[in-house]
Length: 493
Image 1 (cartoon, rainbow, N blue to C red):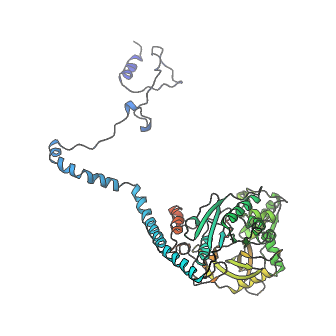
Image 2: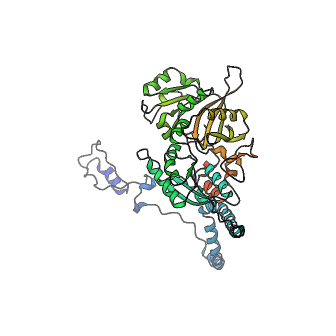
């Protein structure tokens, strides 16, 4: 008998698997290997074959006598146990968190609708008695996903206007849930290849809803496209509160902002114009990136259309730029001065600053603090007076200012402009005036952190509050927004 026969016989009698390695030399008397092999019990549970799977453990059954004695009580308590198992399901945890908010919002909304109907009837009777046949004017508002657009719609609705709002596709339709908005539309995103397609979409809405005023918020789309649509809308009788395309380029282009500031005798930040990647490399090699915080912004007419802004890293190895840098598409690197940061919401009427609201950026509380700032008001008045618009400008513009701490001329702190955006900005939330929401003054919110919850919630319009916070993940509701690579418009850095 071969020497390997007893070992082989012992392994054959044991129902264990045999794994052969091609490098191991087998005895000449050993039979050929198995053609079909099975995994052993040492494998993970997911790899155990079905015929060798371990059945799930069951709780030990009650003794027969005890089961006979407790049969009737268990039969009576079975529905209670089933109900408790249903209540203890993990899905109820989420439902119990969401339902109270939705029920409260629905109750308030239904209550307001019930009260609104008699009030509406009384208004109709009052108009009939006073023989006032004027219909409410229709106002079109863009940026239907922003909080400032919601505040603007509520103010105009309180003043007796009919509100129509729209937003580009893919954005959260916040104003769709507002009782102040009568109609809500979505339009295609503006395309640089066909910029007039956006104008045609707005013209269709204006024709369908008989819009009299159009106020662009420009929170998700650049005001450049609204300026291109302005002449087409004015031809059909819709007044647009936005400057012309040439004036929008002057305000949205950082190089033009610096040029006008210098012409007005205002302080300007240190900047570098780059037209190639070699310019960026030379800027890093000069060591300027180590001397402060910098950002790079698109410049020129394309810059006003794209409205892009990126934070510059200190190290050259971390610089990964996804955009083209060329003479046709120039960029400007701006050094942010150190000091108090301010953001304004300025209302222009016939090229005059008729109202200005200033908010201080509170980095510790991640919010805006409205304040009365005479120096900022004087800066805005001086800057606007030095503009030479092609047509009288009417609309909203937002300036981002910094009170520079590095003062060398002994004249006190200086305000330096590091950016401007055409459109209604977040400081508009602290404007309070019952008759008109277009031009207003700072109310009782001075020196208090601007709370978006207070701006969102209104007893007669609660659904936007619930929709806004339920659409966001719980960890994002109270966490400060991360510093974006692409800075959204009208958001302070």
